[in-house]
Image (tube, rainbow, N blue to C red):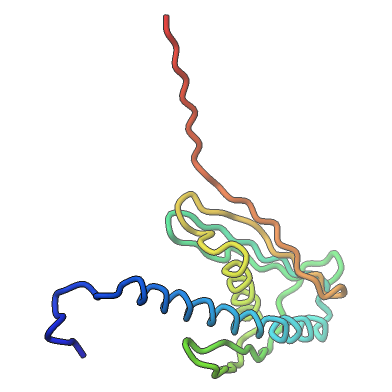
Length: 162
């Protein structure tokens, strides 16, 4: 609802509003981070049950958009299809302590987990010149490695007097 007294006028305490939104964002990020270990364990359990030893997830982004490019599963040195089935993934609800859980196809769950890790470690990876890289899921070690390459435009200026 709009306050008629302040309609068309800037918020009288914009600094407080910005601080509130930033605090809500930080709290949401902390709740989301607390759920990641269980989501990671659920993914590794599903991959291990299917005999998958390695999954490589590549991504690329620039110009304010980015996406997962490829998901490749391996059993030893042999490339195999991702297993069928679903994984229960938990997610934080904005501005609430509620947690929602959804059954997600394994491929989509891998992608979502990678997007969550990118947000945690390299927020904005898709902006401007962007970034690319790969996540490697080492199933026996239950470890995820990220190789991340950021792109940027460099300008070198030289002045000469002749």
